[in-house]
Amino acid sequence: MDLRELDRRVSEATCRIVASVSDDRLRRPTPCVEWDLAALLRHMTANNHGFADAAEGRPADPDVWAGPPLGENWQAAYQESARRVAEAFADDAVLDRTVEVLDYGKMPGSRAIGMHFIDYLVHGWDVARAVGQDPALDEESCRTVLTMGQRWPDIPRVWGGPGAPWGNRVPVADDAPVADRMLGFLGRSPNWPDQDL
Image 1 (tube, rainbow, N blue to C red):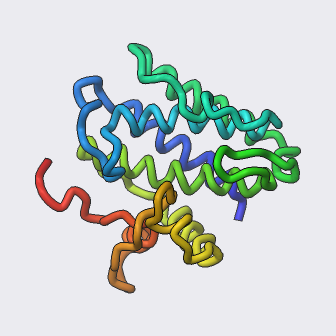
Image 2 (image 1 turned 90 degrees about the vertical axis):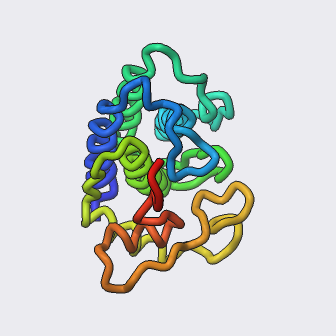
Image 3 (image 1 turned 45 degrees about the vertical axis):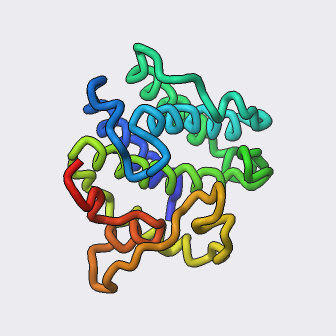
């Protein structure tokens, strides 16, 4: 399992999804209940820069990870952030480097790449669903997330607690498509929105 290759594929797919978003849709709700699409895209742009800083050996700067509000050129800013993190992750030395991720502290670079991969796989789906697109999730990536997730501790800091990255798991049938099982595992309803927006 080459996490950098999976992350590259997910990032490229997410860039295509984001490129299709028009300004008039930025106030649409998303599966991230606390964020509309503008807030989600701000988070994604900023976190690309945060992960790039980490891969380059910089300390975690809360201002970088928060990012500025979306400006007029938010599309170009997002694509540039994705390019930057891809270049930072392409350095072979990143895999063994100790890096710092905001709120999670110091860790091996390979773990940070795994975090980015999962985050952007799911957030790409979030953006696509918010604008009514078919996200067409990569099955190998979804299986990889399910495998990685089995090692995560079952604690509120990870699942459903204040500030946790993932919501409480959503029940999904064992014979459901792997993408649906991955989404339910991470606290997303595969059918979101369950009613018309």
